[in-house]
Image (tube, rainbow, N blue to C red; front, side, top):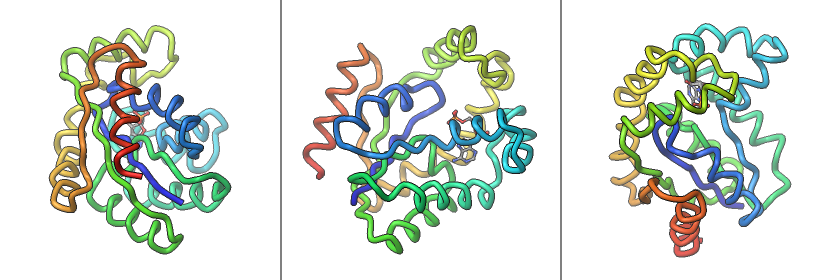
Amino acid sequence: MIAIVLFGKPGAGKGTQAQFLKEKYNLTHISTGDVFRFNLKNDTELGKQAKVFIDKGELVPDEITINMLANEVANNMDKAGFLFDGFPRTIKQAEALEELLQEKNIKFVATIGIDADDEVLVSRILERGKTSGRSDDQDENKIRNRYIEYNEKTAPLIKYYEEKSKYTAVDGIGAIEEVTERLSKVIDTLI
Ligand code: AMP
C-alpha cells in the first residue's frame, strides 16, 4: 500500500483534487476536517472535543487528531493506499504519521503541495462559505486565524519534508482539470 499527502493552505483545493485522485489511483481519501465535521454533526464525544477549536479556526490538539487518524487508517485497509488531506498539520502529527505507516507497512510516497496566493484563497473560502454551511468559512476573522495557524504550525512541514526529499509542489491556480493533471504527473513519476 502507498500513502500520499495532499498539502496546502485552507482553500487551496485539496478536497476537490482528492475527489479525482482517489478514483484514479484507488486510494482511500481521509480528510481530517471532514471526519471532524461528521463527528460534529452527529454530536459524538470526538465532535464535542473538536468543536471548541474548529469554531475558533484553531487546530484541534495533536493527541485527539492523531488518535482519530489512526482509527481511520486501521478501518480502511482495503484499497491500494491512502490520500491524506489536511493531515499532517504539525511536526508532531508528521512524526506520528511516519510511525503509523511504518507499523502498517505502508509506503510513504510524498507530500504534494498545492500552491496558491493567500488573497485568492481567502476570497475563495468566503465564496465557498455561502454554500458550504461551514461557520469557519463565513467569518473573515476565523478564516484569517486559520492562516495564522497554518503559518505558525503547518508551514514548517514544507522544510521538514524537503529535508527528507519528500516534498513537491504544483501550481494550484488554474482550471480544476489542469491542477489534477499537474498532480497526476507528479504522482506518476513517484509511484
Ligand atoms: P479543513 O476542512 O481541513 O479546513 O479543517 C477544518 C478544521 O478542522 C481546521 O480549521 C481545524 O480546526 C480542524 N482540523 C482538520 N484537520 C486537522 C489537523 N490535522 N490537525 C488539527 N486540526 C485539524
